[in-house]
Image (cartoon, rainbow, N blue to C red; front, side, top):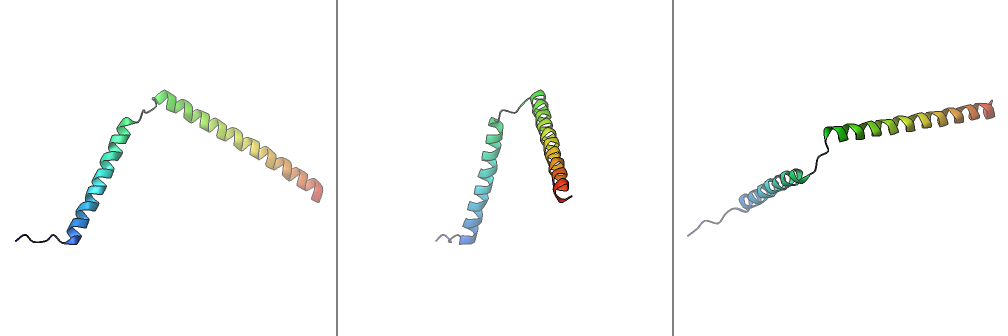
Length: 75
């Protein structure tokens, strides 16, 4: 007569299979990604940095203007 498999062993095997399957699917998905070239990545990075710098300067100017306005009002 066959011995029954303990539930813990079955659960551990199923969860391990899920983990292995997950990483296999992640790997397959990563292979499908169209990665940007180095030049495109550099250009996009420069655009993001430029926009960030411009927004920071604009917010700094607005902050300075409000500080000046507040100083005039409080005085």
